[in-house]
Structures are given as C-alpha cells and as structure tokens.
Amino acid sequence: MTSYPWPAQGLDVDAIRRATGARPTPFQQFVLKVHSRCNLACTYCYVYEGPDQSWRDRPRAVSSRVVDAAARRIAEHAAVHQLLDVHVNLHGGEPLLSGPAPLIRYVAAVRRAVAERAGESCRVHVTTQTNGTLLNHAVIGELADAGIRIGVSLDGGLARHNSRRVDRRGLPSWPAATRGLRVLAGYPDSYAGILCTIDPATDPVEVYESLLDFAPPSLDLLLPHANWAAPPPGAGGPEPYGRWLAAVFDQWFDAERMRTTIRLFTEIVGLLMGLPSGTEAVGTSPVVAVVVDTDGAIEQVDSLKTTYAGAPVTGFDVFRHAFDLALDHPGIAARQIGLAALSPTCRDCALVEVCGGGNYAHRFHADSGFLNPSVYCRDLEFLIRHIAGRLSAAIGDARLREG
Amino acid sequence: MLATDTRQPVLAAVAEMLLWRVGTSSRCAFYDDSPYVPPEQSPSLKHR
Image (cartoon, rainbow over all chains, first blue to last red; front, side, top):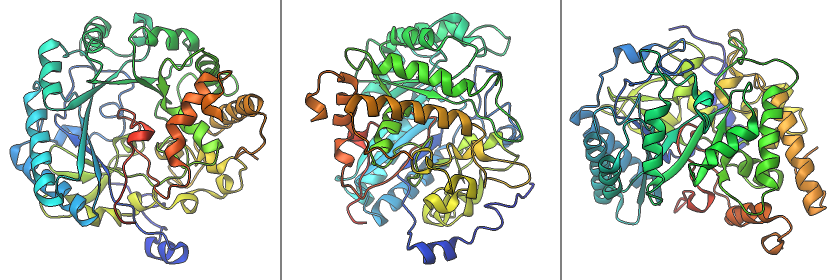
C-alpha cells in the first residue's frame, strides 16, 4: 500500500489533542457491509471503479461470525460511551443481493447485543442504502417488520438521468429501480429518501422536479467523487457544480411549502446561521461514521476508495479490536479535529466554518494527501455565497456566518 | 420568528428542523452515502 504524507504521516494526533483540548468523539454511525458485490455496474461507482480494488479480496457476503463480533463491538462502544442513539446503515455492494434475511439477522444481533450491554435506553436506528432494483412488496414488508428504513440511489427521475446506472450487460437499471421505488413510495414509514449523484450535463430543475415524483421524504445531491489526482467529470465552464446546485436551491427554496428535505441545503442554511453541521459534506463537525466490511475489517468510509489503494484501511478488525482503537487512527482523528485538519488556504478563507473544506475525499492530492482545499472549492464557494445571499435577502439580517 | 414567517415557508421549515441545535454542544457529522439523519433525530450522548 502506498503511504501518503498527510495524515498517514505528519499528523500528530496526541499533540493536536493536547494543544486544542479536543477529545475523540465516539462513533455513532456504523456502516455495516452485508454484501460486497452488486448487480449493477454503474460507471462511476466508487467501490468497483476506483483505485482501491479491495472488494475483490473480500468475502461476498458477511458471515455469522462477523455479524456476532461486530454486534458485540457496537454494543461495547455504546456502553462505554453511554450512547443514547446508535445509527446502523446496512450497505454493499448491493445489500439486498442475498435478499432481506441477512440484513434482518444482522440487525437482530446488533439490537440484542446493544440491549444487553448498553441497556434499553440506547436506541438503534437502522437504514439500508440500495439501488432499488430488488425492492418489492415482500422485501419491503420484511424490512419494515425489522424496523429497517430504506434509502435508494437514483440520479434523477427520468431514464436519461440514469444512463450511468447500468447492469453488468450495460443495460439500464432504470426500469427495475423505478419499479422498486414506486412500491417503496407506498410505504412512507419505511422510505428514508433518495441519494442523487450530480451530473452537470443534466438540467438541474428537471432532475429535482422529476425526483419529486417519487415523493422522497428526504433527498441529497452528492458531488461525484473526485479529487486533485482525478478531477471531476464534465467540469466545463466556471463552477458548473455550484451553479447546478444553486439552480436547484432556488427551486427548492422558493416553493410554497417544503416538498422534501435536501440535506446539503438544510445543512448549509444551518451553518450560515452559526449552527453545527450534521453531514460530512460541509462544516467542521467531527465525523462519527465507521465501516465494518464483510471480512470484519474496521475501515474508514468507502469514499476514500476513490483516492488510492488501501486508503480506507485502519488495520483493525472487530475480532481483535475495540472501536476505540480506531478513534486514534490518524485518518479518523483527522476528521474529528475541525479546523486543525484543514489546509492553510482553507483556514484563511472567510467561508471556512461553513464549507469546512468540503468532503474529505475530495481534498486528496497524490503529493500532499488530504491537506488541501476541495477539488470542488470554487463550486462550494459559489453555492455557499448564493445561499447566503438568498438568506440575507429573506431575513434581512447580516448575522450570517459569511465573510 | 422564522417559524411563523409564511413569506418563506421553506426557510421556516428548515429553521424548525434545526432549532434543537441552538445552544447544543453535540456536534457530529454522518456519512454522505447513507440516508439523511434528520436533525431532530440526531444522536446525543449522556455524558460529554
């Protein structure tokens, strides 16, 4: 595995904690890999198409041995830190590739272990993120009975928005995905929302309005994973992603009622008002997510797979190590120390408290690791200034956190 | 005030969602490739 200069080298976690008084923030979101393969072959997939190909060496499906060990470690972590809430996100590959039963068994093990070790006062909230193609009434019903809410990945509400989401034969996943999503929309208690990866070649308002046809309770608009070594696709013209997002923001903001929550916009509004963020995309709040892969490895988030081979590795696993050990890993600690983890360029920026350097994976440069502004720096600045302007006009108040 | 300002219903709704964060010491960010953890459901710690 290649070693890059920061934070793998050059970040003295203990020194920063001593200097700032910062303490590690316990993990509160556990991304549990149920299946390491997928029935789709999306052209931009960060798991299969990036420089990290570790999926090839992982077990296809999680074993009962990993499930039991992960459940014990989560319960241990919840008990030690007296967590009131634990969020579990069942992930893949495609988590439903072996049907709903493995998800239900995993969740049952976690709930049982947490109740025994941390007590009934610790609530376990469970979601799964799927491509939607395997959803039907029976699957959704079984997941609902197990208290598992469902999020779907879809890049727009029309077939042409999803041309990159294809199966292994190159055929569009759209018919199966939308069939599943239409069924899911009939189960509002089970429906967590839609994640949409932005394609700046699309019409932003058309993408947004067409997704509303699926009645998502929440929506997020994700910048495609890119970095300084692998710049964003289709980045013609100035701030194409910022302008795309600003167009959706206006459509969303000017509506007569909130038709859905959009995570990125909600979080930026909160940050501009001086509140802490709840997403890794913006702001400087400590990231509290950790991954358990199908082999039991404790990993950093998957988006790092777009940077270099081995980037998510911590060297820990649920059989031998408590999650607390991972809190001291430089890669995880770097995401919990706020401004101290940002480049001088970011720290000198008037928007730093809002932007927070953007998504960590988007800061990567082959020479300097993650100590850089986001490759989407100009897009983020455009969007944040746009939203700040709209808020300022709306509330006639200069007390926004904007320089 | 925002919550009753019907001139900007979306802003009012967002403000209501985020109200709990005012004055909180609880700060945590979640993974982007997972469903949104709505602000009113965000985790908390017994002791920090």
